[in-house]
Image 1 (cartoon, rainbow, N blue to C red):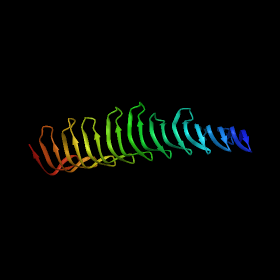
Image 2 (image 1 turned 180 degrees about the horizontal axis):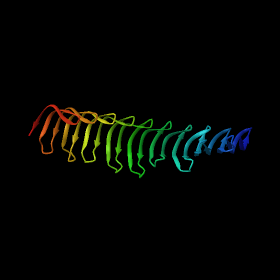
Image 3 (image 1 turned 90 degrees about the vertical axis):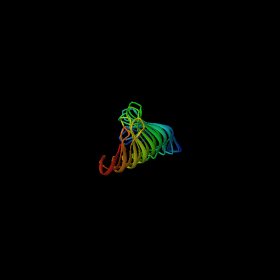
Image 4 (image 1 turned 45 degrees about the vertical axis):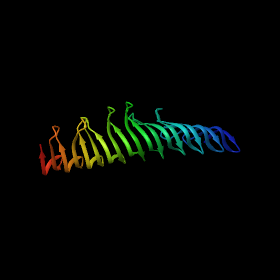
Length: 231
């Protein structure tokens, strides 16, 4: 039921719409029977929205709250959906700042750890990192930068190891897969060759820190099969 102002038998002006159980559904401004202007939506799950409305839906700038009163999302809405630019606060303490479409992260955006450090900075499609992006360790250092598909490393990229070394090459399903190069932390090449399921496998050249090297076959990260050592 509705309590508020009417004009020509339609809701016009200030008014409150209630659920059948007597709880508020919407409180705010009405134009020709539709919610329009500033108002508050009260959702069935206890969450609520404060902001701009048009054509009976959330449209424009607004804030959606968790039922405990903490902000869930602050930003743009289009026809009742999160769309445009906004900040989303996750229950685990992380947050996302960036572009949205159809209630999902779409476009450019940054995901942050709970402490405010970057977790991922790059492109998103349908709530997944996809396209070009950079992932960070919790300490703020880069973990990976390059191509993504559906939230996984896929294509060409660079991964950084905790010991200061790094890898540049091809990835598949989050793993080093295909052609690539491993580097020591000083930037010198450690291995140049084939990878399979994150390990050296196939043919490659392994260069020791003293400059000696091996050219030949590898399997499961180890020299395996035919090859030759050079001193």
